[in-house]
Length: 253
Ligand code: TMP
Image (tube, rainbow, N blue to C red; front, side, top):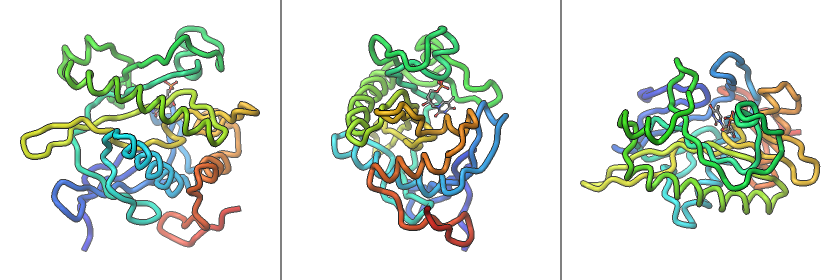
């Protein structure tokens, strides 16, 4: 029986899950950057991001950060709770890099005075523009109450993940979170959704400052697959072999 496809994004596909209120999240090897202008394949990325995101979501649940994650099903799929995605990308930055460096003329790698939270409206046609709380609440994308949950959660995730990555020799420069509304009976809870992976984080090696994330793809730095594998290896979740999408297994070097 073929599963019903609910949504196809740039890096993942969502299928109907086995029980009501669940979905299956499938991780592809496809990579895009600069709002779809640059496209490519990062071989094995889906498998690695599935494993890395599983690990990080489980660790977050342990400290009481609610997430949509239920369990990993296989190399490329995980079972998740169905949530109503809030159309805002929440970015937390510890060190200047990427768009904040460009926008504000800050040298990449310069530490920020404190963690900075930014919001981007999820709208591909517009290239995910940066927005303020005023826009978010005025247009009803999220309420003040939603934001009162989201921002402290994002900062807790930042503190926790910064420490976790530091423990494996990686600096968490910045990352993006998505949140969803989870309905249980009449109650609504805000939970962390989507994925947390080298696609959505900037991670620099603490000793060499080498980029270990999707910037290797965005900026044509080479060693893209190797960087994703190294992040998984340091977190202790690198699989013995990485099956290709829909086909033969490829051996990890
Ligand atoms: P930025 O510097 O390009 O604004 O990116 C900030 C962080 O957010 C970086 O870790 C990458 C992540 N990010 C996404 O996950 N998805 C996106 O669409 C963009 C633009 C950034």
